[in-house]
Length: 258
Image (spheres, rainbow, N blue to C red):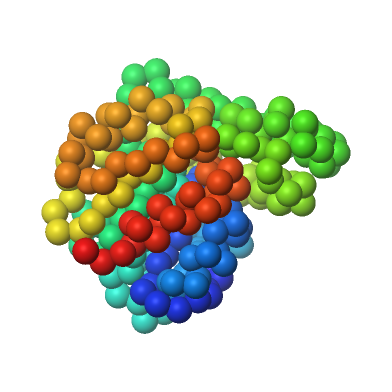
């Protein structure tokens, strides 16, 4: 059973976070989304308060876990939106006909060459550094300048994150038991399926993404020419705190039946 929160009314919309994150990354947009959607924000297996997956946490296996969990709630073919790893899961669910729509935000699957070890190194180094500092990282995260220094490679406007949320997210990143097993599958995931037939797809990319750099967005456009492609202006890799209204608008538009 996955840990989750559920609120709102309307068409079901499942929100899936990235590696090392948790459902709380969606907090800035939950109120806006839940006014028009039945929103379910989950902790992936091995992250947040969800137990680790029984087996290899490939993108396909994680997509299976999300689909089975939604079915357990009585939700068949929900709209799915995801960030980073969650974006890859959203695309996989759309490809296999288990999503009504997919809205990936800076999804994995479009990196190549040196971009792959770069992203893995950034994630590993960030986690190791935060773990090494332990509680000593909390005072700098309590200041806007400290958040800009320590989180600027993941967020476009890190000073907008409340201190308590930044501390909680960082502690969760360090503590995530599924991180080491999941990372190779995140780095190794390659979206080579082209467009998804019969399912609306909106690919959104942070214009300030420093982890999955914006040229990957242009690669996504070439591989999925029939999808809708938009920029999240001023947003980094994890965009929800950067500009909640812009992100909520993209998620609502992406999960609107066509």
